[in-house]
Length: 121
Image (tube, rainbow, N blue to C red; front, side, top):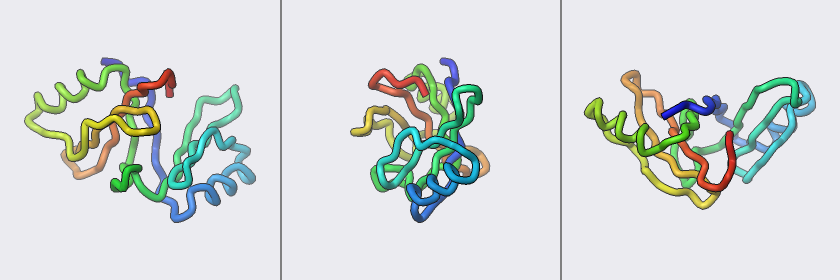
């Protein structure tokens, strides 16, 4: 299994409005938004992503970070090998990802995801 990206999630009561703020101030682009979450990107010369969200999707708590992997089953097996179980999922979400949440030893909520529909980040 390879990690493909790690994305921070900033809590926001109004993710779309906060995305507009970051667009105006930092020139980030709004790559995608679904009301409860907005994905921000940087110009093609920079590799930066920032997500602003009111929740984690499907009514879940907002995770501190999202980790995109190339093999979700391998990540799930590695989690279970530690004796831990996911706190959400695994589940295939309607927006085209398969994911699970875990709590790290410090209690941080982590979203581990894999794109099911051709996306790569």
